[in-house]
Length: 415
Ligand SMILES: [Zn+2]
Image (cartoon, rainbow, N blue to C red; front, side):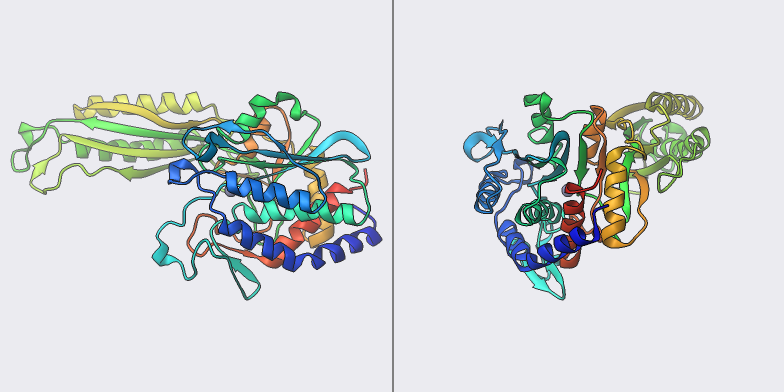
């Protein structure tokens, strides 16, 4: 909470930035920041622009924590840290946004050019405007408002701009954590505006573990009219998928209502083409399961259940079954719902948006988990319709402005 008078000043100040924020988004969108995995040249040009913008606003020069990467221009991936002193040096209130974007995808699905931002009906359209330029813009203008109101933050504020979020964070946050391990402390408060709901009422504090499994079922190919001459790998795979579907759900039936859905999920997803013709019994069949596992359930237990079921089906069907764990991301310990950062963001959301915040866990991974893994409480929050990575990605301008107001309230919170 902040006083009513102060709250009004911050709202008024940030409302005044509305057009400048839109212009900043337009400039950002025009500077391509695709990672090399997406055929891009990294975030360097965008980082230079952000750094110039911060300095031009009088926020100071951001410190560079670059990671070397010979695949991109200048052989480096940029990370920027801007620290603003507050009345106290601790906790540091960190807001982190990523500078990279994903590619546009099929451009014929776009109504407007993905890298030329278009403003229409209170929204801005373009690749990256929601993910993660909305949060990136909001955090800059939140800090600017506090300083232009001639206030000092309650405690130090750190704005962190990272590379490589869309492709695993190796050259982004993970590099920063490794290169400057004493930058963050367990008492700090981390906000990651890279997840959100249309009302801005969801605060994400926990994630499920992700386990992706490939099953390779080997039988014996034969003519479809002579099944006894072969062993049908497809039939065995079908049995396996159905058995896993039932067995895993029953074996791991825990419920945690912080999450939506509140259970572990085990979904058969990808299937590889086995044979192109209909009159051959396939000797090989391959498919995947995508498992999202509540943090209270050990991933190894799920694995041993998978191995047991695979063994039973292999014996029953006379096939060989190989399992490979093609994706494995154990959940970080959740941030406590009572952590100071959760309470502070919730208070700011309540005051600015007039909604009652809900604490949630999600099935996907966010970069906030990397802080949690290191014992630093982190909340992912923003206000968005969730159109990241889609064609015609957009941000609602009012949401971007309101998010900046929320962050400004957080910066000058009463303790
Ligand atoms: Zn993102």
